[in-house]
Length: 272
Ligand SMILES: [Zn+2]
Ligand SMILES: [Zn+2]
Figure 1 (cartoon, rainbow, N blue to C red):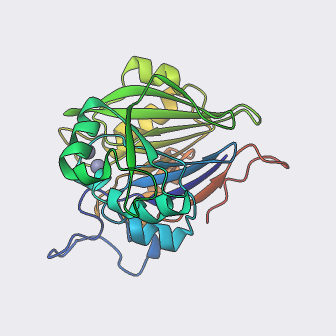
Figure 2: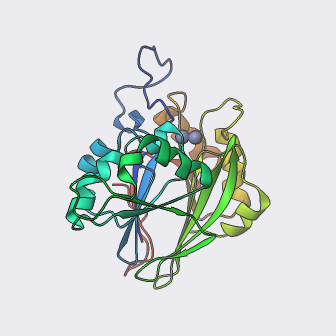
């Protein structure tokens, strides 16, 4: 399984525009965060999770050349607004629509923003999306499995656990959540890697704090956890040192981070 963190920033991106961003080191490249999204290659099948406003530039900087399936975790702007840039991926498939799995809320948002992309005939030359309700277990061509659960965030958000049967590798991706309920913890127990919402140090009504994310990482016994959807307040250098001291299995993600799990010669939690 190969995982690329395309973006790990909060909804406005990092740094904030028109703001002083106190405490944030602009000279640290891993502090520049685009909107949160990951790309997962599972048994050779390319799964794109969320397509936010930075999706186009993320594809270019991370070298994303294929998308077979899209999962939209929920319909917020920072996760859905880049869907039109799936256009070339459709063209490369001969115009065939790309399946997009989401919740009722996510599919409703897709219909509201991109009505022209739904139900397009093949080879139309435009973006063509095939909206589908995410099942609790999705079996992908090639044999990969994605299990889903709902996370509370004001709206329901899809929490995703990816499993690659040929290698046994497992990844949990829990972005945009106020907490991780018991069923979601059960689903993610003992994963190789967990990528968790760790918005900022201070309490927030719909996101987990850094400390809350660390508690979840430990409760599910993740071999390695990374925080995502972070604000400028989570300065890369400052918080990497804090986590290293208190939670050595938890680290900050950064845009472009790549992880290879279960390959020949073992895992490489390589930092791309
Ligand atoms: Zn978000
Ligand atoms: Zn959200």
